Length: 177
Image (cartoon, rainbow, N blue to C red):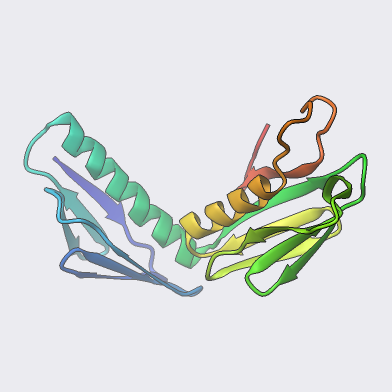
């Protein structure tokens, strides 16, 4: 079985053994894949992924490889953006970016600020109640957005009453309902 991924003109892809290096106008991403039965090769303006058998597990790994490579190509050409919204009704929160940490102050009236880690090559922009997380690596952008959401998770209180927090409202152009 074989899958083909088209490479856009403004993107350059290099394959070294099990590593795929994708370069675009926004930057460069490198990912090393484990030596599975999936063979990765480049032919003209496309990447070929192939497996020897039609076993279900190998087909699943093939689809996973395709998804990772497509995300890398989209990241270096268009970028990845997640949008979050700050919601509070009891105590007004203030949010600041300090280096690779986002500080959430006065969450539910707490004296100590809560902290969320910002991963490398990810930029966080705070404008009022809206937070934009962007970068070229989809996994780092998504994990940073998840870190922000988890930092304001409320434990031990009724979630119907205490709805304060930071919530993801848009994942890479797709609105969350």
